[in-house]
Image (cartoon, rainbow, N blue to C red; front, side, top):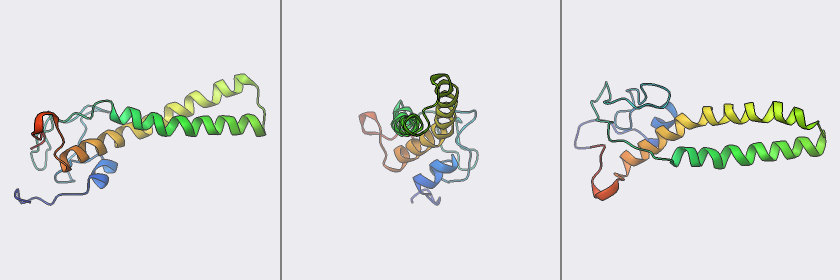
Length: 125
């Protein structure tokens, strides 16, 4: 900890959507738009990029859960197809929206913690 700051857990910072270095400043300026800098510790967040990783993880979590619940509902209750169409798309949308932001924050915090980058230098230093 050469910078004199307390480094927070990437899991804690990700779930709270906070700065990966200090764990106090906000990570997002909008829903998924990152701040340019942490307002508490000054960490430059402009180079942080989680890519498509958060979306892939959310798809792999929400997809099987929604599919399993839809199959269970079909096997047990046998609702008409129009009811499936009314129930599952909104539930999938809520699940995706609820998980996407914390997953993006966690992947950025893990990128910071493990100094992951293209070309060998950490863009979050």
